[in-house]
Length: 235
Image 1: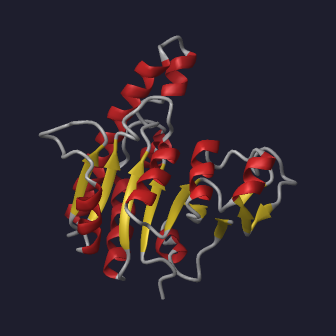
Image 2: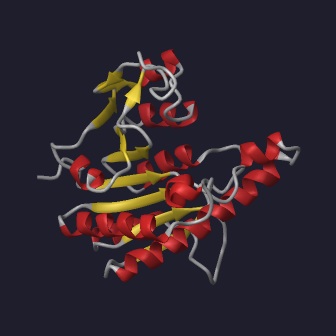
């Protein structure tokens, strides 16, 4: 049985790059799309936000000397490319999908419309929210929480490289402890880098739970049920 009826799945752009670390790995995007389509068939309503780090990251561009606003603008365009690629992959699996951009991108995709997004979700269409919030200096984590609140999602499902939230980076610190559940306040107090502070604060304000899990085949649909392994973030 599904724990959440309507969820927003947050993916990093790097996740779509696979082992190459850049661009889009077709094998990865296809199995992710297949899993999303299977989740919809199981009764879930799925919205999606994908980062753009497989093409460009505003923070990295800024560190290299580029104006941060310019770098973030490039990052927003990268998220549109990823969303269109995922839309194509979903449609190949027979799943209806619609990309909505925070900035005007016609004729590539329509602009974000909250009421239309909710109607599409209710009708079994996967809605992909692209171009972040439409403004520089805001991460796609913040965009994900914002769109989840606007589209009345029950949870944000954040896919990462590890199976939940740890007290430290488990790759660098073998003594790091995994949390099965944690509060928003504890994340902010410990300064855990699972999401930026604006995203955590917005989720806390709207009492929107977040489930952090490892991106691997089978894990997304399992995370929608009682069998999911990860960390639950709540009040």
